[in-house]
Image (tube, rainbow, N blue to C red; front, side, top):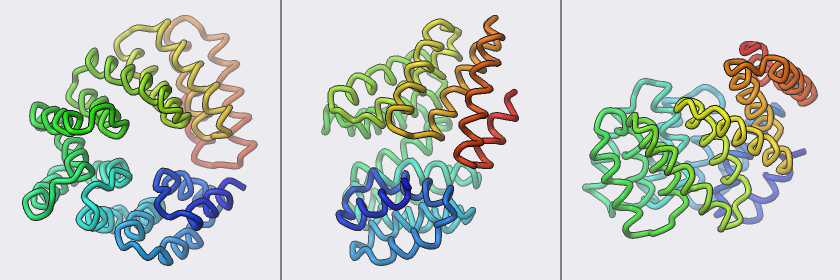
Length: 274
């Protein structure tokens, strides 16, 4: 299955960090988190081992342990952008955004202010210090024009700062850059995020179009969980914009897919929005 394929990719080349979160997600669905933990423990690079361990801890519910491991990963490799998103997610769920941002600021003072550290801190402070967060991301982009990681963080920072129109433009920029780079997964993720942003901006026809595109892209990737999320989002958009019949059909399609992959979390997600 997907977990074993991704495990083989990481075992062959531990630097393929884009595969880490996908592997951990697949391992969690398959009940193989312990196996993933063992794999990451065999990686010689301490930062990469900590990244993998942090992801496994987060997937197992140990978010505080995940924060410790991910902060360590960034201290060992300040440019490790793969740690940015999981660190934000764990800190946000634990109510530790400010505390984690303070720790990252300390890293900036004691080590080279790497891309990963700066983007992580920007995402942490986006809601509380939006101007500083935007300046941090723009500083990264000035040094690394076209960086997909920085473009991704910029869109997220603008969204959390409450700048909806600017965030939609940033998602559009990321989408174009991801397509040009041939990054199919990032293209799909940028598309669904753009769909959600457009929905909140009440750009309903555009939001529905983007959500349909995202569902198609995730289906082509064989990414069933995100295909389900995209279908679920599209059904929600339609239900609130006079498309109830199609919304019901799409919700049923998402429910069928969730049952097919036997994923309780995805099943609950669909049932909760019906």
